[in-house]
Image 1 (cartoon, rainbow, N blue to C red):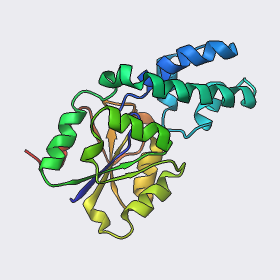
Image 2 (cartoon, rainbow, N blue to C red):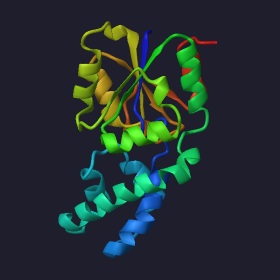
Image 3 (cartoon, rainbow, N blue to C red):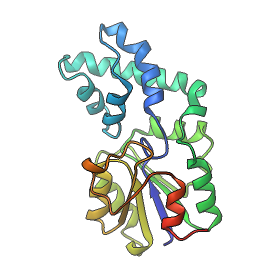
Length: 207
């Protein structure tokens, strides 16, 4: 094992906390209700604007698109105020321990650059990653470009959604579902599951 690839939203970051804070400001301006945080968590991982279309399926797409742009502006403004609540407990320690063990750490996210990089910077973990790939909707393609020039048996993908497990499987990569985050066993098809970040260390035989 030489590289651990992480999804971001729902795997390292409880990004719904930030999105809900922004929706509370943006949605009422368009006469829209603020979704429940669990609905936002279930939708995390879809690229924009599809993310907002799923949350507001009965609203004209033009309205939803405009509201989504305001949400993204508010997320950037609010990020410094909620950054301490974003990382799942134990994730910072997990990343540090993996790095100390000599493993390369990558991010593979379908989130936009303007979403992924600010979260990584504000939470103070961006320096732990060797490669960050985001801004494309196809997780299979992201992982293919990230792994094709290397021994794929040395990669492991940690994510929370079926597209993470599908992407890993399509590229011959072992996958791990982050059940401490947004991963639900009944809706995903990972090779392994972990209920705490620390369990990944045990899975990799890191003591």
